Length: 205
Image (cartoon, rainbow, N blue to C red):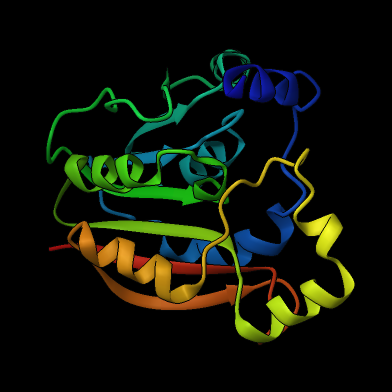
């Protein structure tokens, strides 16, 4: 059922996601510039973000991973010089241990059932001192209160795509549990304490 949900979603989506203009000005500055490094987009969708990363670092080896065969098909059709692989929630990623320099994963983990496996696999493929830049919708105390009072049914609609909701503490605990040390925490969209999302830059210990 999960597989079909995302295949249906990507049938009607062949452009940048709606939050691109919110996040990219904040996140693009963290894309590494070194030559001949491997950059992975975990949850790459149709590959649009990887095409932007390529503009920043054309010398990097770029790899996109996504659960949707339709999204991967779109990405392969639209972007050359980038490797794309279909993956399955809860299974091993198609990359060797300690081979990746930088992982970008934006607004993805809230869609994953097996989050423990996802964090463990991200950590496994990162090199020592490799970086992960992760974003997910922000759920802090004040924002959660506002959601409860004014937007509970909309925010937690069971027909929606979001199945996980992370507080900063839970997110940091998961990262540290998997050997990922937080280096920087920030927010984008609206203003704190009710931002759209939180982003965390981490380093593999």
